[in-house]
Amino acid sequence: MKVALDTNVLAYAEGVNSAEKRETVLELLRNVPQEAAVIPVQVLGELFNVLVRKAGREPEGARQALLGWRDAFPVIGTTPEVMMMAVDLAADHRFAIWDAVILSAASQTGCRLLLSEDLQDGFTWGGVTVVNPFASPRHALLETLLGAE
Image 1 (cartoon, rainbow, N blue to C red):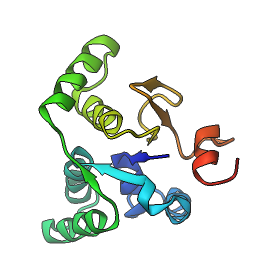
Image 2: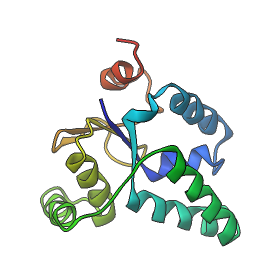
Image 3: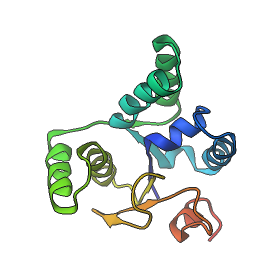
Image 4: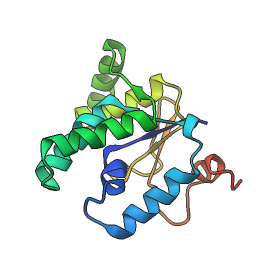
């Protein structure tokens, strides 16, 4: 099962906002099979902004963080097809366009899950279910991914 990672998940992993959530995300990422996880390219752009604007990192430090994530997980691109699917998703479900791009990219890549705290937990579209990694109890699909069926 493939899983896409949203910006907020990586931001927490980088130590932005919450030490408790950072530990939760890092533990989760240690247990997700590395070949199962992908990062939409949109997430890297958003993460750069969060690290520089919100966390106060220098651009070079933010770049190094992005390079580290790129090295850790495959990055999936935004194709014209992904963008048009995102436009439809944004129009039909009133998603912000950049959130729709992330969800569309995950769908086009065959992901079953999108780990995100920001989108509606349990929302399913294009074969992808949005799962809040901080929700308790954990979503059944996340349990399956982690091997805890």
